[in-house]
Image (tube, rainbow, N blue to C red; front, side, top):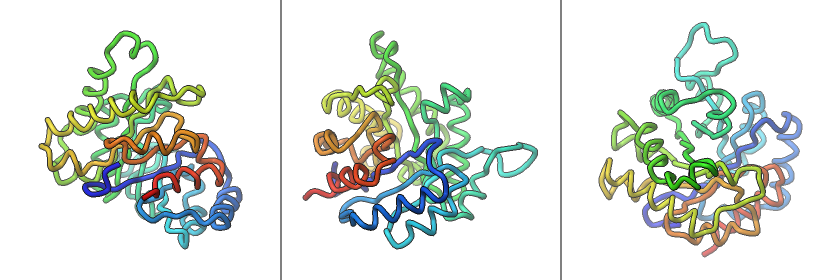
Length: 257
């Protein structure tokens, strides 16, 4: 982490988990533990049906509410989709875009990710842009080429001013839900490469202001080590974000002096 130049963000990605009542219970559990959110911003990205409950439940905990997806059109005949303006009106501050599960199961492409990034920024939200490689791609030695393509595609047409509002999450697909975790060195190498890519696009000043998260099975046992890396500015947390105790321990790791 480098708090001098950019914000540290710990964001939970609940995926398709938790009901509205469970959301309220989670907030109560967090309140009882009282996390030390001194240095970092805390976000919970919840299913769309839980956004209203989450906004109310987490308000006095200084936890921002995020969404897990959006559609890039402002309105229209798109049954089942949710627009950026709809999310913004509910109090959503962050939105996850291009998660590997959206790419794998729902056919999201670099092109659609870019359109969603623009929609989120135009609505005044902060996109959490996910990039990452599969195990096969890593073994082929094309990780960096793929990451560069994903970053450049996602940010195409985005101004330097708006890039500062973006968060980029490196999520090695091979380490999501598998129990495997990239070593701190592997994670740091790719996160540093992401910042280098942003620097080539926008210059050093913009690049050092962009928050880059690690999103591959960060948990209490490895959070401090991962967050000690200079270009890892937080985490996009999956499984550990569903347990208040684990989530708070990661938050506390990010708040160490």
